[in-house]
Image (cartoon, helix red, strand yellow):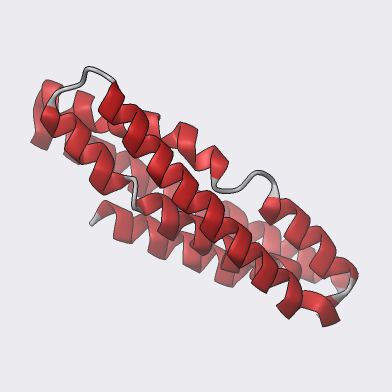
Length: 158
């Protein structure tokens, strides 16, 4: 496959995957809003908005640097991924602990605090999922990256 065909294929796969991903997200939001009601959905939205701030801590640009460095020298990929995994583990644990401490210190109801505790564990899984999906980006195997994102979205919806 020549370069132009590869670019066209990867672009098409990304666009189609993004469309499906957003459609699933829309259906989940509609379902949750109806199922949880106004108050329950408000708590759900708060928990995810709160944890999004801590999700920034789990990456700090590591994924971008990883893609760049592996693209430069693929023979060092295992070393880079190993180092990035250790760094992400430390950052993710820091994010989970920080989220738990901060929500505990804030005057929120016990159920909201419990939801944050439980959902903060997703920071660990999302952080490592993004790490390994970068390998597909380096190899320009975008169909696997899109599939991984869709599986993540479907599992999150569940």
